[in-house]
Image (cartoon, rainbow, N blue to C red):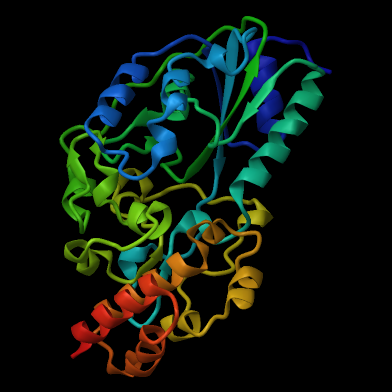
Length: 338
């Protein structure tokens, strides 16, 4: 058990494998108003869980734990030394977002935060990793972990933006950290590089235009007008982070669970996966969130964007399958190749 002071709590987090640690008060933030405005514009698209009753709960972390008075915010690095997506030009390979190359981060971060609270010796706490209705980036900024960039990602001046965020709500007061200044300046590289123009204004993302939304969250058909912009992405997108100057010398993770297993596999291999093979290949990976049908839909779009005639046979097979969504996208891809 360690002393329950802010420096000791943050040190415990660092010793448990987190690269960033800071403290913010467990109080409502101005980010709640910005979030409500974002939802009001319809930018959440089909992600109803961002706009339902949980949106109201996001205003105050005490809706998750009534006794919360402080929030320990942590960042877990997932960057690897492998090249960025902007360095690849082989259209016959699919691209999987960097964060999904290894094990599911939810499990890794939760296990790490459980080690933190065990070291602190506290019995009352609430661990949050992405799925709780908590404005993670807003509290991470308040805790000094970084500023929120124009691409809406949290950016740390020394280590870049390749971080997973997690929090522990605690029932006692800790000295809070201060947010850092915004250091994006006049740079608009992330905005300019987005193939689908999803960053509609600095610091404002319309998820309905985002490649990650199309390939992960959206169930059903990808809008036909957006398919060309998806390129060879079969799960997620890294472009706005790949081009960010603050990631030129981004730190690299030492976490074995995030070691790359699947980065840019051949599209032909992915198209031939059975449901059982898909489940086995991505069992402990975030890629499983796309589900088998959605993943094959993404593969078909990537094949259509490849310009490669070698994909005629697998696409014809997909176009004749019993899944209407996969078949429709495969038929579109065949039309592109013709």
